[in-house]
Length: 170
Image (cartoon, rainbow, N blue to C red; front, top):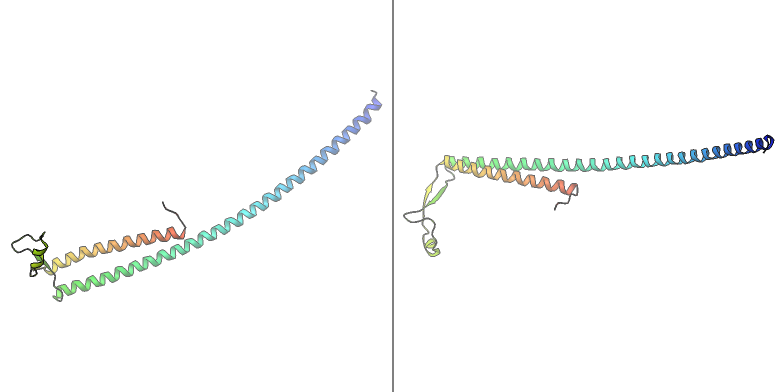
């Protein structure tokens, strides 16, 4: 091959390579632009879904907080009412309006296995409790009642949270 035939062929090949390179660049740029648009769309969609999920969770949290606050108020009211009743009972015991007594075995075992003997012992002897002992027993019973109310409130709070957030327990 001569230089005169070689140069136009090289020029053609060079022009073809440049045209191919340019066309490939345009396709690459178009593909990158499409990927960028798709990424922006996905990012916007994800941000919207995150915002909606956040709103749902915050709404659930507010509702659960309100329910727990209502349950706490109810517990406070129950405890206040129970304390009022206990105070009234203790005042009645101290004044003598209410008298407490316990059965006392008179010469025989208090726990009778024979039902006929127990039924025939209708007039059992009783011992009256002094007001301080009655108040102490009432305080013990009141503490137990308060603990039961508090445990029931805990159970209610647990159930509220489970139902609010749709948690399945095994």
